[in-house]
Image (tube, rainbow, N blue to C red; front, side):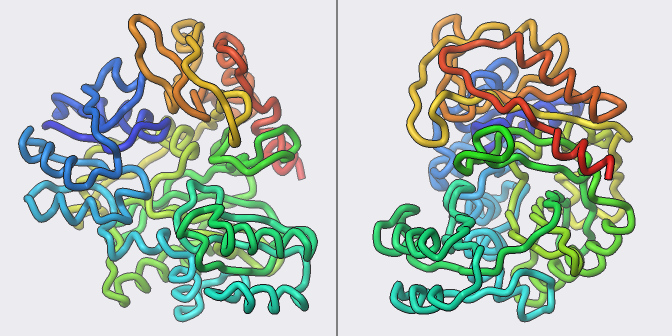
Length: 424
Protein backbone atom coordinates (compact mmCIF):
# COMPACT_ATOMS: atom_id res chain seq x y z
CA UNK A 1 0.00 0.00 0.00
CA UNK A 2 1.28 3.45 -0.98
CA UNK A 3 0.25 6.16 1.49
CA UNK A 4 0.51 9.94 1.18
CA UNK A 5 0.46 12.15 4.29
CA UNK A 6 -0.46 15.78 3.67
CA UNK A 7 1.31 18.21 6.00
CA UNK A 8 4.75 18.83 7.41
CA UNK A 9 4.61 19.32 11.18
CA UNK A 10 5.10 17.30 14.34
CA UNK A 11 1.59 15.90 14.09
CA UNK A 12 2.29 14.52 10.61
CA UNK A 13 5.61 13.04 11.74
CA UNK A 14 3.84 11.23 14.60
CA UNK A 15 1.16 9.94 12.21
CA UNK A 16 3.81 8.72 9.76
CA UNK A 17 5.70 6.84 12.47
CA UNK A 18 2.54 5.01 13.50
CA UNK A 19 1.40 4.25 9.93
CA UNK A 20 4.83 2.79 9.16
CA UNK A 21 4.12 0.04 11.71
CA UNK A 22 1.55 -1.52 9.36
CA UNK A 23 3.27 -4.29 7.33
CA UNK A 24 1.00 -3.65 4.34
CA UNK A 25 2.33 -0.09 3.98
CA UNK A 26 5.20 -0.41 1.54
CA UNK A 27 5.93 3.30 0.99
CA UNK A 28 5.00 6.59 2.65
CA UNK A 29 5.09 9.94 0.90
CA UNK A 30 4.75 13.32 2.61
CA UNK A 31 3.69 16.64 1.09
CA UNK A 32 5.67 18.64 2.00
CA UNK A 33 7.03 16.68 4.99
CA UNK A 34 10.02 17.82 7.06
CA UNK A 35 13.59 16.88 7.96
CA UNK A 36 12.52 14.10 10.29
CA UNK A 37 9.94 12.58 7.97
CA UNK A 38 12.54 12.60 5.17
CA UNK A 39 14.46 9.92 7.09
CA UNK A 40 11.82 7.29 6.20
CA UNK A 41 9.30 9.00 3.88
CA UNK A 42 9.71 10.41 0.39
CA UNK A 43 8.98 14.12 0.63
CA UNK A 44 7.07 15.76 -2.21
CA UNK A 45 7.60 19.53 -2.74
CA UNK A 46 3.93 20.49 -2.74
CA UNK A 47 2.18 22.83 -0.32
CA UNK A 48 -0.38 21.20 1.95
CA UNK A 49 -2.99 23.67 0.67
CA UNK A 50 -2.41 22.80 -3.02
CA UNK A 51 -5.60 20.79 -3.44
CA UNK A 52 -5.37 20.51 -7.21
CA UNK A 53 -1.64 19.73 -7.27
CA UNK A 54 -1.74 17.09 -4.54
CA UNK A 55 -4.81 15.41 -6.02
CA UNK A 56 -3.18 15.21 -9.44
CA UNK A 57 0.10 13.95 -7.98
CA UNK A 58 -1.67 11.27 -5.93
CA UNK A 59 -3.51 10.03 -9.01
CA UNK A 60 -0.41 10.04 -11.21
CA UNK A 61 1.61 8.14 -8.60
CA UNK A 62 -1.02 5.48 -7.85
CA UNK A 63 -1.46 6.43 -4.20
CA UNK A 64 -3.79 4.01 -2.40
CA UNK A 65 -4.67 6.12 0.64
CA UNK A 66 -4.18 9.75 1.70
CA UNK A 67 -4.12 11.17 5.22
CA UNK A 68 -5.08 14.85 5.14
CA UNK A 69 -3.81 16.09 8.49
CA UNK A 70 -3.98 19.95 8.63
CA UNK A 71 -7.12 22.07 8.91
CA UNK A 72 -6.60 24.29 5.85
CA UNK A 73 -6.68 21.57 3.14
CA UNK A 74 -9.61 19.87 4.89
CA UNK A 75 -11.61 23.11 4.87
CA UNK A 76 -10.60 23.68 1.24
CA UNK A 77 -12.12 20.31 0.25
CA UNK A 78 -9.07 18.13 -0.38
CA UNK A 79 -10.87 14.97 0.78
CA UNK A 80 -13.68 15.73 -1.69
CA UNK A 81 -11.20 16.25 -4.54
CA UNK A 82 -9.39 12.98 -3.80
CA UNK A 83 -12.67 11.10 -3.56
CA UNK A 84 -13.68 12.41 -6.99
CA UNK A 85 -10.62 10.75 -8.56
CA UNK A 86 -11.21 7.50 -6.67
CA UNK A 87 -8.63 7.84 -3.87
CA UNK A 88 -9.85 7.19 -0.30
CA UNK A 89 -8.70 9.78 2.23
CA UNK A 90 -8.76 10.09 6.01
CA UNK A 91 -10.45 13.26 7.19
CA UNK A 92 -13.78 15.05 6.89
CA UNK A 93 -15.08 16.43 3.60
CA UNK A 94 -15.48 20.18 3.13
CA UNK A 95 -19.07 20.22 4.36
CA UNK A 96 -18.09 18.58 7.68
CA UNK A 97 -14.79 20.47 8.13
CA UNK A 98 -16.81 23.65 8.67
CA UNK A 99 -17.14 22.55 12.30
CA UNK A 100 -13.65 24.01 12.71
CA UNK A 101 -13.62 26.33 9.72
CA UNK A 102 -16.37 28.53 11.20
CA UNK A 103 -16.75 29.14 14.92
CA UNK A 104 -20.08 30.82 14.18
CA UNK A 105 -21.31 27.59 12.60
CA UNK A 106 -20.09 25.40 15.45
CA UNK A 107 -21.56 27.65 18.15
CA UNK A 108 -24.91 27.77 16.37
CA UNK A 109 -24.81 23.97 15.96
CA UNK A 110 -24.33 23.52 19.70
CA UNK A 111 -27.13 25.93 20.51
CA UNK A 112 -29.53 24.21 18.08
CA UNK A 113 -28.84 20.70 19.39
CA UNK A 114 -28.41 21.48 23.08
CA UNK A 115 -24.71 20.63 23.29
CA UNK A 116 -23.22 22.37 26.35
CA UNK A 117 -20.97 25.35 25.54
CA UNK A 118 -20.28 28.89 26.73
CA UNK A 119 -22.98 31.54 26.24
CA UNK A 120 -22.10 33.69 23.23
CA UNK A 121 -23.03 36.28 20.63
CA UNK A 122 -21.74 36.61 17.05
CA UNK A 123 -20.98 39.83 15.16
CA UNK A 124 -20.12 40.86 11.61
CA UNK A 125 -20.30 44.62 12.28
CA UNK A 126 -17.60 46.27 14.40
CA UNK A 127 -20.00 48.82 15.89
CA UNK A 128 -22.36 46.10 17.13
CA UNK A 129 -19.50 44.21 18.80
CA UNK A 130 -18.33 47.40 20.53
CA UNK A 131 -21.83 48.18 21.80
CA UNK A 132 -22.16 44.66 23.20
CA UNK A 133 -18.84 44.92 25.03
CA UNK A 134 -19.87 48.12 26.80
CA UNK A 135 -22.10 46.16 29.20
CA UNK A 136 -20.65 42.63 28.93
CA UNK A 137 -19.20 40.97 32.02
CA UNK A 138 -15.41 40.60 32.17
CA UNK A 139 -13.29 38.56 31.68
CA UNK A 140 -14.55 37.60 28.24
CA UNK A 141 -13.31 35.65 25.21
CA UNK A 142 -13.05 37.07 21.68
CA UNK A 143 -12.66 34.57 18.82
CA UNK A 144 -12.03 35.01 15.11
CA UNK A 145 -14.65 33.05 13.17
CA UNK A 146 -12.28 31.29 10.76
CA UNK A 147 -8.95 29.45 10.87
CA UNK A 148 -6.07 31.34 12.53
CA UNK A 149 -3.34 28.75 13.16
CA UNK A 150 -4.68 28.12 16.66
CA UNK A 151 -4.09 31.76 17.66
CA UNK A 152 -7.44 33.41 16.91
CA UNK A 153 -8.73 33.19 20.50
CA UNK A 154 -8.09 36.14 22.84
CA UNK A 155 -8.91 35.92 26.55
CA UNK A 156 -9.60 39.48 27.67
CA UNK A 157 -9.41 40.40 31.36
CA UNK A 158 -10.60 44.00 30.87
CA UNK A 159 -13.03 45.88 28.62
CA UNK A 160 -10.08 47.73 27.07
CA UNK A 161 -8.43 44.43 26.09
CA UNK A 162 -11.69 43.16 24.59
CA UNK A 163 -12.21 46.34 22.55
CA UNK A 164 -8.63 46.13 21.27
CA UNK A 165 -9.06 42.46 20.30
CA UNK A 166 -12.21 43.27 18.31
CA UNK A 167 -10.52 46.28 16.69
CA UNK A 168 -7.45 44.21 15.74
CA UNK A 169 -9.57 41.46 14.21
CA UNK A 170 -12.31 43.41 12.47
CA UNK A 171 -10.59 46.69 11.50
CA UNK A 172 -6.95 45.69 11.13
CA UNK A 173 -7.33 42.11 9.81
CA UNK A 174 -4.99 40.64 12.43
CA UNK A 175 -6.13 37.18 11.31
CA UNK A 176 -7.04 38.13 7.74
CA UNK A 177 -10.53 37.30 6.57
CA UNK A 178 -10.94 34.93 9.54
CA UNK A 179 -11.57 37.94 11.79
CA UNK A 180 -14.24 39.64 9.68
CA UNK A 181 -16.78 37.79 11.83
CA UNK A 182 -16.21 37.37 15.56
CA UNK A 183 -17.65 35.30 18.38
CA UNK A 184 -17.73 36.88 21.84
CA UNK A 185 -18.42 34.38 24.58
CA UNK A 186 -18.47 34.02 28.33
CA UNK A 187 -15.24 33.12 30.11
CA UNK A 188 -15.46 29.62 31.53
CA UNK A 189 -13.45 28.30 34.48
CA UNK A 190 -12.24 24.81 35.30
CA UNK A 191 -9.66 22.30 34.05
CA UNK A 192 -9.19 22.10 30.27
CA UNK A 193 -9.15 18.73 28.54
CA UNK A 194 -8.42 17.77 24.94
CA UNK A 195 -10.04 14.60 23.61
CA UNK A 196 -9.42 13.37 20.07
CA UNK A 197 -11.94 10.88 18.75
CA UNK A 198 -12.10 8.60 15.72
CA UNK A 199 -15.48 8.51 14.04
CA UNK A 200 -17.01 7.07 10.88
CA UNK A 201 -20.06 9.30 11.19
CA UNK A 202 -21.99 6.82 13.35
CA UNK A 203 -19.61 5.27 15.89
CA UNK A 204 -17.31 7.36 18.12
CA UNK A 205 -14.14 5.91 19.66
CA UNK A 206 -12.30 8.48 21.80
CA UNK A 207 -8.54 8.40 22.21
CA UNK A 208 -6.71 8.89 25.49
CA UNK A 209 -7.26 12.40 26.90
CA UNK A 210 -4.55 15.05 27.04
CA UNK A 211 -3.65 18.46 28.49
CA UNK A 212 -2.11 21.12 26.24
CA UNK A 213 0.09 24.05 27.29
CA UNK A 214 -0.66 26.98 24.95
CA UNK A 215 1.26 29.87 26.50
CA UNK A 216 4.83 30.56 25.38
CA UNK A 217 6.33 30.93 28.87
CA UNK A 218 6.39 29.04 32.17
CA UNK A 219 3.44 29.37 34.56
CA UNK A 220 1.11 29.82 31.57
CA UNK A 221 2.42 33.32 30.89
CA UNK A 222 3.29 35.00 27.61
CA UNK A 223 1.57 34.86 24.24
CA UNK A 224 -0.69 32.09 22.95
CA UNK A 225 1.10 29.61 20.70
CA UNK A 226 0.17 26.54 18.71
CA UNK A 227 1.18 24.52 21.79
CA UNK A 228 4.43 24.31 23.79
CA UNK A 229 3.90 20.80 25.10
CA UNK A 230 1.32 18.32 26.29
CA UNK A 231 0.75 15.30 28.54
CA UNK A 232 -1.55 12.28 28.44
CA UNK A 233 -3.74 11.12 30.00
CA UNK A 234 -5.28 14.19 31.64
CA UNK A 235 -5.79 13.38 35.36
CA UNK A 236 -8.90 15.59 35.50
CA UNK A 237 -10.68 13.39 32.95
CA UNK A 238 -12.07 10.57 35.10
CA UNK A 239 -13.95 7.53 33.75
CA UNK A 240 -17.21 9.05 35.03
CA UNK A 241 -16.46 12.32 33.22
CA UNK A 242 -15.57 10.41 30.06
CA UNK A 243 -18.94 8.66 30.12
CA UNK A 244 -20.74 11.95 30.68
CA UNK A 245 -18.89 13.60 27.77
CA UNK A 246 -19.77 10.67 25.50
CA UNK A 247 -23.47 10.99 26.30
CA UNK A 248 -23.76 14.80 26.47
CA UNK A 249 -21.20 15.95 23.88
CA UNK A 250 -19.50 13.38 21.64
CA UNK A 251 -22.44 11.37 20.34
CA UNK A 252 -24.80 14.39 20.18
CA UNK A 253 -22.21 16.24 18.06
CA UNK A 254 -21.81 13.38 15.57
CA UNK A 255 -25.61 12.97 15.35
CA UNK A 256 -26.08 16.72 14.90
CA UNK A 257 -23.60 16.83 12.04
CA UNK A 258 -25.33 13.91 10.33
CA UNK A 259 -28.71 15.57 10.84
CA UNK A 260 -27.34 18.70 9.15
CA UNK A 261 -26.24 16.67 6.13
CA UNK A 262 -22.60 17.10 7.12
CA UNK A 263 -21.65 13.58 8.24
CA UNK A 264 -18.24 13.77 9.93
CA UNK A 265 -15.66 11.05 9.23
CA UNK A 266 -12.10 11.18 10.49
CA UNK A 267 -10.70 12.63 13.72
CA UNK A 268 -12.83 15.11 15.65
CA UNK A 269 -11.04 17.09 18.36
CA UNK A 270 -13.05 18.16 21.38
CA UNK A 271 -11.59 21.04 23.38
CA UNK A 272 -13.42 20.83 26.70
CA UNK A 273 -13.70 22.83 29.91
CA UNK A 274 -14.77 20.90 33.01
CA UNK A 275 -16.76 23.70 34.65
CA UNK A 276 -18.51 23.57 38.06
CA UNK A 277 -21.73 23.15 36.02
CA UNK A 278 -20.40 20.23 34.00
CA UNK A 279 -18.32 19.70 30.85
CA UNK A 280 -18.67 22.28 28.09
CA UNK A 281 -17.20 22.55 24.59
CA UNK A 282 -14.66 25.34 24.13
CA UNK A 283 -13.91 24.44 20.52
CA UNK A 284 -13.99 21.72 17.89
CA UNK A 285 -11.14 20.91 15.53
CA UNK A 286 -11.73 18.81 12.42
CA UNK A 287 -8.42 16.95 12.72
CA UNK A 288 -5.71 15.65 15.04
CA UNK A 289 -4.43 18.32 17.42
CA UNK A 290 -0.80 19.43 17.47
CA UNK A 291 0.99 18.68 19.79
CA UNK A 292 -1.69 16.43 21.34
CA UNK A 293 -1.09 13.84 18.61
CA UNK A 294 2.53 13.51 19.75
CA UNK A 295 1.45 12.09 23.13
CA UNK A 296 -1.72 10.28 22.09
CA UNK A 297 -0.42 8.16 19.20
CA UNK A 298 2.66 6.80 21.03
CA UNK A 299 0.19 5.28 23.52
CA UNK A 300 -1.95 3.68 20.78
CA UNK A 301 -1.54 -0.10 20.69
CA UNK A 302 -3.98 -0.79 17.83
CA UNK A 303 -3.01 -0.32 14.18
CA UNK A 304 -3.55 3.30 13.08
CA UNK A 305 -3.80 2.51 9.37
CA UNK A 306 -6.58 -0.02 10.02
CA UNK A 307 -8.48 2.49 12.17
CA UNK A 308 -8.19 5.22 9.55
CA UNK A 309 -9.50 2.90 6.85
CA UNK A 310 -12.41 1.97 9.14
CA UNK A 311 -13.45 5.63 9.49
CA UNK A 312 -13.65 5.82 5.69
CA UNK A 313 -15.37 2.45 5.23
CA UNK A 314 -17.89 2.85 8.05
CA UNK A 315 -16.58 -0.15 10.00
CA UNK A 316 -15.22 1.60 13.09
CA UNK A 317 -17.61 -0.22 15.44
CA UNK A 318 -15.91 -3.54 14.59
CA UNK A 319 -12.36 -2.12 14.80
CA UNK A 320 -10.13 -2.27 17.89
CA UNK A 321 -8.96 1.06 19.33
CA UNK A 322 -6.80 0.22 22.35
CA UNK A 323 -4.40 2.43 24.30
CA UNK A 324 -1.62 1.53 26.74
CA UNK A 325 -2.25 2.17 30.43
CA UNK A 326 0.77 4.45 30.55
CA UNK A 327 1.55 8.18 30.48
CA UNK A 328 3.26 10.38 27.91
CA UNK A 329 4.83 13.84 27.91
CA UNK A 330 5.82 15.98 24.91
CA UNK A 331 8.14 18.99 25.33
CA UNK A 332 8.22 21.38 22.38
CA UNK A 333 11.56 22.96 21.45
CA UNK A 334 10.87 26.27 19.71
CA UNK A 335 12.80 29.02 17.97
CA UNK A 336 13.59 32.00 20.18
CA UNK A 337 10.99 34.72 19.61
CA UNK A 338 8.18 32.32 18.66
CA UNK A 339 5.23 32.93 18.24
CA UNK A 340 6.17 36.39 16.93
CA UNK A 341 9.47 36.95 15.08
CA UNK A 342 12.22 34.35 14.95
CA UNK A 343 15.16 33.36 12.79
CA UNK A 344 15.69 29.89 11.33
CA UNK A 345 18.29 27.91 9.38
CA UNK A 346 20.28 26.93 12.49
CA UNK A 347 21.88 23.42 12.59
CA UNK A 348 20.40 21.09 15.22
CA UNK A 349 22.69 18.83 17.26
CA UNK A 350 21.98 15.98 19.67
CA UNK A 351 19.09 14.38 17.74
CA UNK A 352 20.56 10.87 17.77
CA UNK A 353 21.40 11.07 21.46
CA UNK A 354 17.90 12.28 22.35
CA UNK A 355 16.29 9.54 20.26
CA UNK A 356 17.93 6.92 22.49
CA UNK A 357 15.65 7.98 25.35
CA UNK A 358 12.55 9.39 23.64
CA UNK A 359 10.79 9.89 20.33
CA UNK A 360 11.78 13.11 18.61
CA UNK A 361 9.07 14.40 16.30
CA UNK A 362 10.16 17.04 13.80
CA UNK A 363 7.90 20.05 13.23
CA UNK A 364 9.83 22.99 11.78
CA UNK A 365 12.94 21.33 10.31
CA UNK A 366 14.47 20.69 6.91
CA UNK A 367 17.47 18.85 5.48
CA UNK A 368 20.38 21.04 4.42
CA UNK A 369 23.24 18.93 3.09
CA UNK A 370 24.15 16.51 5.86
CA UNK A 371 22.57 18.72 8.51
CA UNK A 372 19.04 19.07 9.81
CA UNK A 373 18.32 22.75 10.43
CA UNK A 374 15.53 24.77 12.02
CA UNK A 375 12.79 25.88 9.63
CA UNK A 376 9.88 27.07 11.75
CA UNK A 377 8.59 28.39 15.06
CA UNK A 378 7.98 25.07 16.73
CA UNK A 379 11.01 22.99 15.75
CA UNK A 380 10.81 19.65 17.59
CA UNK A 381 8.53 17.74 19.96
CA UNK A 382 10.36 15.41 22.34
CA UNK A 383 7.98 12.70 23.59
CA UNK A 384 8.60 10.09 26.26
CA UNK A 385 6.29 7.39 27.62
CA UNK A 386 6.47 5.69 31.01
CA UNK A 387 4.31 3.87 33.56
CA UNK A 388 3.69 7.11 35.47
CA UNK A 389 3.37 10.77 34.48
CA UNK A 390 6.31 11.96 36.65
CA UNK A 391 8.55 9.37 34.99
CA UNK A 392 7.39 10.38 31.50
CA UNK A 393 8.04 14.06 32.26
CA UNK A 394 11.53 13.30 33.60
CA UNK A 395 12.41 11.19 30.55
CA UNK A 396 11.15 13.81 28.10
CA UNK A 397 13.20 16.59 29.67
CA UNK A 398 16.30 14.40 29.96
CA UNK A 399 16.10 13.73 26.22
CA UNK A 400 15.30 17.38 25.40
CA UNK A 401 18.44 18.54 27.24
CA UNK A 402 20.56 16.59 24.75
CA UNK A 403 19.36 18.74 21.84
CA UNK A 404 20.77 22.16 21.06
CA UNK A 405 20.35 24.84 18.41
CA UNK A 406 20.84 28.62 18.42
CA UNK A 407 18.14 30.53 20.35
CA UNK A 408 16.36 27.32 21.40
CA UNK A 409 13.41 28.01 23.70
CA UNK A 410 11.30 25.60 25.76
CA UNK A 411 9.01 25.69 28.76
CA UNK A 412 10.40 24.01 31.86
CA UNK A 413 7.02 23.22 33.47
CA UNK A 414 5.18 20.95 31.01
CA UNK A 415 3.04 18.55 33.03
CA UNK A 416 3.39 20.33 36.37
CA UNK A 417 -0.21 21.58 36.31
CA UNK A 418 -1.38 18.00 35.72
CA UNK A 419 0.67 16.71 38.65
CA UNK A 420 -0.94 19.32 40.92
CA UNK A 421 -4.41 18.38 39.68
CA UNK A 422 -3.66 14.69 40.29
CA UNK A 423 -2.86 15.39 43.95
CA UNK A 424 -6.13 17.24 44.62
